[in-house]
Length: 301
Image (cartoon, rainbow, N blue to C red; front, side):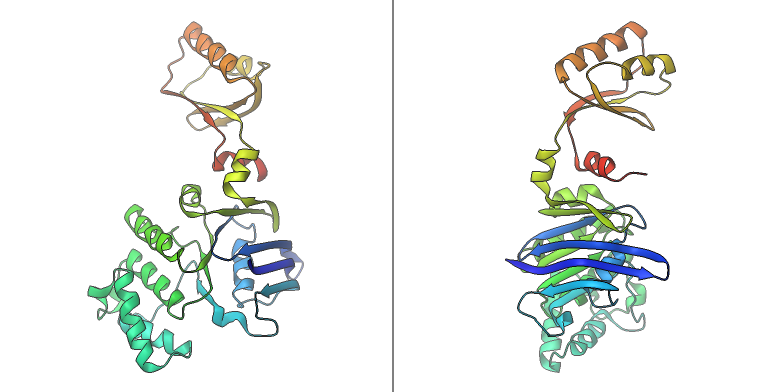
């Protein structure tokens, strides 16, 4: 069952079109990742879905909410959340709950429950100004779910965090997936593969590919060989790129990646070329197309 249906969504700012005819749906109980380079229109799309921006055209339909204000059904965490640093974490959550029209008694109870769940129970009465970045992000998640939303919208929830903070937030999202539908944007493709069932990739305001993540990876799966080696002779590289089994080639900062038609032939030919030229190789990996490979394929510079 679709929780949210978006059709022909457009947002313009003067002569600039930030979002250009976006259409997609979010199934209830799923986790959908929104990907794309900077300027692709991800944040603008999320702000329209959350009710913070009015679309220039198009429709946003929330299940069983025709003609109603859907903001009460949505939890939202912006990329750069703002807090009242003089408040304690608990004071902020109680304040947020009351804004969501939750009674004072339930706001206090609910705040204590959420603070414990996000690992801030011991810091509940500390001022937010003394919180670390990871603690503030967890507090942001707490305020986004304080009113038990049906849809949780997160804009780059882990991009500003260190590895430990990112791990903590991802664990929270895994737990929250059991209770609510999640839509989040990110640049960290590994995180998408960890927690998402569905994916949308945007570029220049438009959707270039969307669908079930595992199905997309299967449909676009190709044998790939990744080599790490520095100082490769130009002629050697050009000769290898011209081989009949090379489907696609991309240079990397520390070597190259090639998609091939016949992995056995490619392996034999490449190993022979390495041996004959005494090229120093740091690593040689044979695999299949990853989400990063798909992303780079559909998003053109």
